[in-house]
Image (cartoon, rainbow, N blue to C red):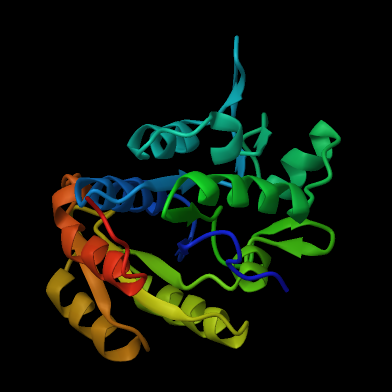
Length: 236
């Protein structure tokens, strides 16, 4: 399978579920990397729930990643497969008569890499979300050999969800670079105890914790520096 090749560095942002803040974390990481002077692009290879605009179908998550990128790439490279229906991507693709082709996603990824030092790729839903009859979201980081950062939605049940996701990531032969907690439930009981347990049971370091509605860029500055240093990116 094709690895990074033309792209200097990249990470894949996975989540324990849908609606747990992958975009908040991914766009925050892109912004924090840009603040370091990194030429960085966000990417949402597949997005369902897009709206019709004069420019074509547009997705809020992909637009957030595009806006945070430096320099800002064209939308079609950020989100090469945009699907109208706000349902599971394989269902949205079938309804739209679209066959999601990994080679199209890869071509957009390579174009982003040609103009940027680093690409932050956001997944869709959880690790095993289907994109088609024989394609899952996990095939993207697996085939492209991307290290994975797992976003854990901090709420009741997160410890089991996080461990199951981490096991699946490792079982698929991917590197779990670290995890980031996002407090999606502002009233979560025993928050600190749960974070401590996650730090103990997950086979990768915690790269940051985002409080409920906390600005992401400053909270993820340390994680951005680790990503930046991994590829020894030279900045002005």
